[in-house]
Length: 342
Image (cartoon, rainbow, N blue to C red; front, side, top):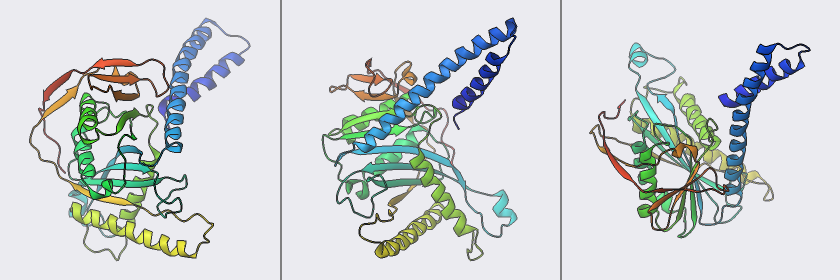
């Protein structure tokens, strides 16, 4: 649960108790004023979260053929080497892997197609496993470019001059960075220059359930496979790890296909899983980091560029009346520490 929302719940309960007291002293009155000021700030957060969540849901409902909504997130690192029976080596030499997913919503083709989800949208997961344990902006956009060059991305038939909305959380090490703004500019100018590209942030502490549910499924697949006595040697490499997950996805789809054949035509089919897995490799060489500086940009949640790419346009949310225009100012920073490899 969001810590701010939880704090607001506690404050409301305390205020209610103080206001119910028949006799209040000066300390009670001062505390009451302080709590109401805190609650006002939290209420602003709640209103903003509801507004942003409504805009996200509206984008999904209004998604047109050839458009896309893209949600990106990291999973907590997964430990390899586990099994039904573990040796001392398995326990003390556990390798870890980063899991990063780009979930792409589209609406295209036949509405009855077996990839449809309950809300009538298609979803394709591009999932990256890596021995690079540094979750930074370079990791994000190295993977994003790998996705753009893959045939499964091209098969989504995202059309020119259509909207693509990116959605991320406020993680300060990989999403809420000046490097993120630079990479967003490169995407807008180069890789997706024929589309209308927008960058959106969810409200603080309010995440992306589509990625979270996908991560839970992957964890269950891995645990179910490696914790059974039938499973042989523990898995230590990324290709073996990906093979377990890919096999589990294929088996799940096979079962769903069999069940769908038995369902009435008028009944919605069980949606199939569509996942493309990658083994992301990262060198440990130090690299220069390109940034677009934008002071106080963390106060805004919706971004896009002017047509000439001279301005970064920022709004508190999509429907906000005020737009802050940042002149593009680039900055180069030299890395002092390489990525951590597992």
